[in-house]
Length: 152
Image 1: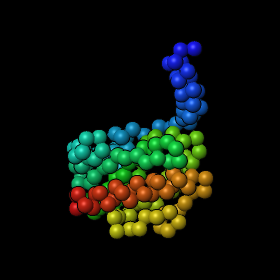
Image 2: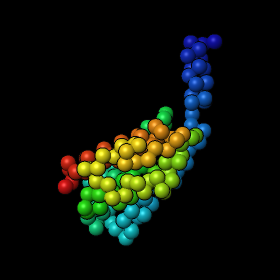
Image 3: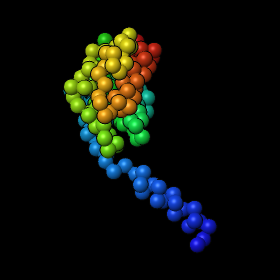
Image 4: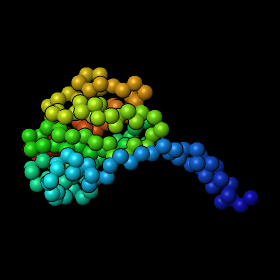
């Protein structure tokens, strides 16, 4: 067996086991923008990450790690600096997808940078999706903090 094969075979075996078996794309960035700000046009402020909506709001694209894999999400912030909408774009874990539930995501609507935004405080935890819930909550808080320091 060649040296290359001795090293590559175990890596290939691990990668085939670790590859995500369950990935769901719910929305594209453009679809999430239209849902958050119907009829608005968007000007890119930060390449592929932040857009200003023609109605004065801002739209953010970001990702966090769920338990092992990335969760792509967006946060729409109105002209008042409060969350208008949070959407999950891509969820790659095989469990914990309950964070896509509109009722859970709806908890963020109306929150601003002054809100605590903590699991088991002002945001409900989801049993079986604790890490995804926690990391998404931290991500939305990070977006709100960034927005307050750069665009208010």
